[in-house]
Length: 72
Ligand SMILES: [Zn+2]
Image 1 (spheres, rainbow, N blue to C red):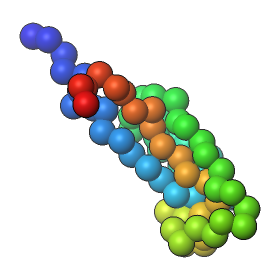
Image 2 (image 1 turned 45 degrees about the vertical axis):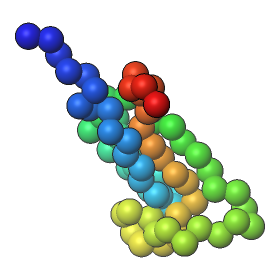
Image 3 (image 1 turned 180 degrees about the horizontal axis):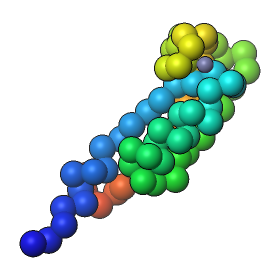
Image 4 (image 1 turned 135 degrees about the vertical axis):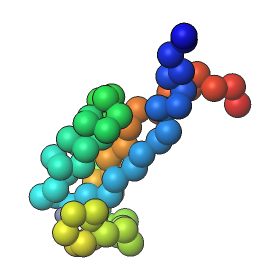
């Protein structure tokens, strides 16, 4: 049987504050097994998204590496 990797490539995005960015990274690694991509929100550009862990305004967006194996 061939392993269908594509099933596991769904993109996951976690918004996180400064304190919980490590939690978010770990969650990506544990869940997706891929290195997380860390993106800092620009200062002055206020996020309306809350941290997934404490509910404060998020400072970072942590996502998994998106696989481009699919056409499109
Ligand atoms: Zn937080």
